[in-house]
Length: 451
Image 1 (cartoon, one colour):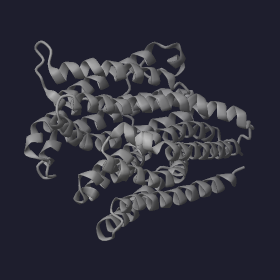
Image 2 (tube, one colour; image 1 turned 90 degrees about the horizontal axis):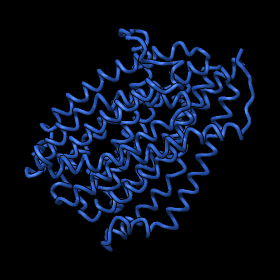
Image 3 (cartoon, one colour; image 1 turned 45 degrees about the horizontal axis):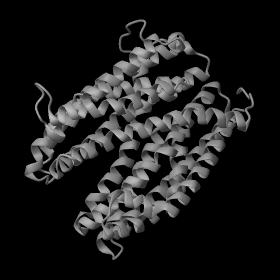
Image 4 (cartoon, one colour; image 1 turned 90 degrees about the vertical axis):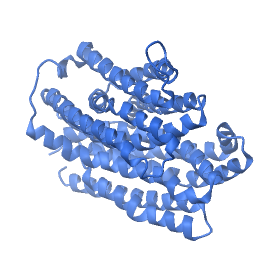
């Protein structure tokens, strides 16, 4: 029999926004790391900018795959918190840190071998030294990235997203002098150009992890579930649960991110103007995606808490409120993109032809805002219910079995050109949206039998 404690819409909206707003600021701050790298590299040379673009294009999918696995910490801690079993939380966090350390080392070693792929991928020879050094350097930060993700999930699941937000904002400021030091060279540190941002980012990731770990160790709010008071060996039960829950999350994120990043490759034969315009439209929609994604993380926490309580009525109400909130945000985003698309594109380029194509492609981005908001919100709810394997397969089918072939066919073999890729993305997101919402409905129906 479930606990049927009722909640009000006003209360739950307040809780969602309490979680969502700091998470949103954190997401924008982390997106700002790449923006700072791009701006500072752009002031060095076009070659440095291109080298960073190549390096980041390989680093980001790997980073999101491995840090995405550690998102499993969030629903597990939220469930234990909701089930009133806080004594489990320290073990969950300690075991998550073990998994994160191992995964971080694997990711680090993987990035050390990535430069071997650059010639195979057709990267120009003049970019190889800097892009290779960037990948070698940034790889050393991967254990910190994954362990930070585990601690972030723990803190946010307990309802404390603000420390992570504060650290992200401080890191944004610290990155500038770090980049300057390694890019331009100071004292014994040589001038490394764009590759220097790899060293700067790796150091920054370790500083962020150490800062968050120190804060968690000292702050009173974490003392009841303090993960650092004892040393704990690997526990097969929790390792299995973390990987069973987290691996599908990481792969689902990888499938979604990689479909967007490979779109530029599909369009590469169509010329520089098309690629530049596509990149602008992708950049705009990627920044705006931070809004529904932050809402989805908040939904994972709230749904996970009620899932731990076995409070199915409250859990369903949170889902409805979350989907309704996502719908409102989507309509606001669509209106802003429609009204200000010329001004938005002007921030990126003054080239008339590029701007004209970019404004056209943004219309397709407007078309999928609602479906994107619904699918990511549904995925967030499913994670809170610890259903991650189904969404992984849905994501793979929607993006790689359906969207990718449709996009290639329309872009390469019809007169649609760049628009074909975007139609493919719309089709993929629509399929993902329908399947994820259907799965959420079926899960709720199954649990409702327990009321």
